[in-house]
Each structure stands twice: as structure tokens, then as C-alpha cells.
Amino acid sequence: MSAKHAVYPGTFDPVTVGHLDILERSLALFDTVTLAVASGGRSTLLDHPTRLDVARAAVERLAAAERCRVTGFDGLLVDAVKRLGADVVVRGVRGAADVDHEQPMAALNRTMHPDFEVVLFFARPELSMISATLVRDVARCGGPVDPYVPPEAAAALRDRFGR
Image 1 (cartoon, rainbow, N blue to C red):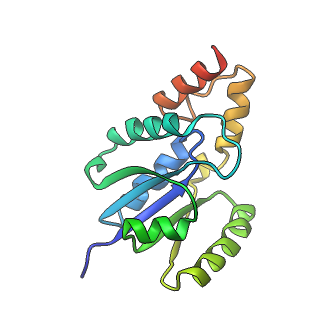
Image 2 (image 1 turned 180 degrees about the vertical axis):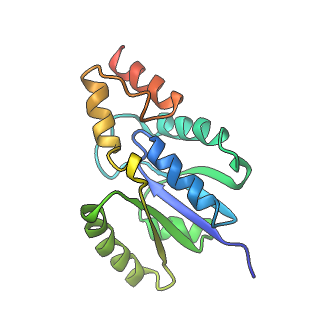
């Protein structure tokens, strides 16, 4: 059996403990997982180099860090998947709305890359309320983000908002 390589794409703006949980669960199933940090696509709070640095620092603390890479990408996900030589794309979903969002994207990507496969990981119930959007909103209002993000992300958010 050949080695299986998964790509976990996202803006990771910022990376959250929910993202890291999906990453660790992915590493339990795949030989290698690449956390692919999108350069943009929508407006982001943290710039791309900061998001890459935060993701790299957070990944270094994982038990299986040696099997995880962090890279940036821009453009189409299918092109990044091909370039990285991956077999599958990992996505995390918190509920039905996320599934409704992911399904048409997976179908469209499959039309562009017939071997494109997506594996959905459902968020653990205790993490299902965490989203990068909500974390940004809490940080913007001066609230505590430490329970929801790794220390590097909390520091980047404090730097961004001057707190």
C-alpha cells in the first residue's frame, strides 16, 4: 500500500484549537498531512506570513509534528493538491451549514480533478462552537481568546488589536 498524503486547506485566520484537533485526527489516519494556508480569497485579519508562522509554531507542538508540513498556497485548491502530490483533502465541519457549504465545493473540484477526494471530519461537540470568525470577533472586542486558539495565535491577535 502506498503512503497516503492528505491536504488540510484553509485560511486559518487564525488557526484554532478546533483546526488543530482536525489536524491531529487526520494524522491518525494519513501518513502525511499538509496544512495548506490559503493566501486569501476573502478578506483576512492576519496577513499570510503571520498565519503561516502561527500555524508552523502550533504544529511544532503536536505529537506527530514530523509527519505534518505547513505550506502556503494561492489559486485553486485542485492545483495545490496536484502540486503537493496529495491523495485526499481533509475538511472539518461543525454542523449542517458547513456540510452544505463543503458539498458543492467538493463536487466542483472533482469535475476539475477527477481523482479529487474529500474526507469530512465532524468537530468534537466540545469544540463545535469554535470558528475563526467568532475568535476574531472576540479578539476585536477585547475578549479572552486563549481557550480557543494556540498561544501563538493569541499573541498574534493581541498584537493586531494592541492588547
